[in-house]
Amino acid sequence: MELKKLQRNFYCKDTLTVAQNLLGKIIVHSINGKKLSGRIVETEAYKGVTDKAAHSYGGRRTKRTEIMYGPCGFSYVYMIYGMYYCFNIVTEKEGIPEAVLIRALEPLGNLNEISLNRYNRSFSSLNKAKIINLTNGPGKLCKALSIGKEENKIDLCGSTLYIAEDNFNEFTIKAAKRIGISYAQEAANYPWRFYIENSSYISAK
Image 1 (spheres, rainbow, N blue to C red):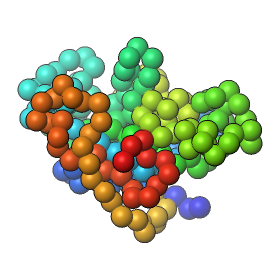
Image 2 (image 1 turned 180 degrees about the vertical axis):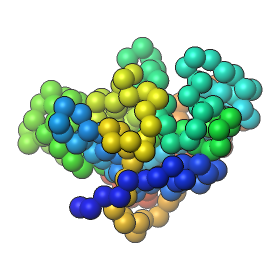
Image 3 (image 1 turned 30 degrees about the vertical axis):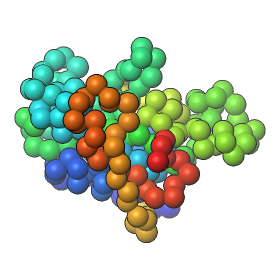
Image 4 (image 1 turned 90 degrees about the horizontal axis):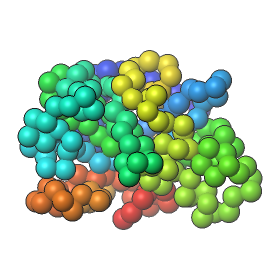
């Protein structure tokens, strides 16, 4: 499988466009001499200043959200519930604090390492349900691919953590409401979650 790393200009576009264009692409994390990878099958767009679900809504600018105000193509990793990490990709022009959350992956490379990270069990010991459950959620995929606070603010055009493509494009994109943001009033109903139709690995339909 020949991979081509995405360049900066891929990310510096409208966030809704990037969220859809990321589907089918591959996250690669090089760590401890191994490359852990998974194909993106579900994303969510967060449209910054005008989006009540976004961390930067209303122009909120904190130490945590500062990375979103910078150049596109950087990672924004934060913790939820005091225990799970979420991996986001900064989009748009500098000064426009928007990002795409990666919600689910199809696991691809170094499956045994991914399984050990996630379950502390070998991949060969997993049943079908456990395999699907490896990376079908934002916190799950971060644990499986060893993405945590150390991976925050990483340039995705580098060689440690990056997104690549392999000409996988024969699929249909579906749109739906984002998940877990009932607090966001009307923004909770925006159809800004995108997923590959018929993928077994999406977190919800």
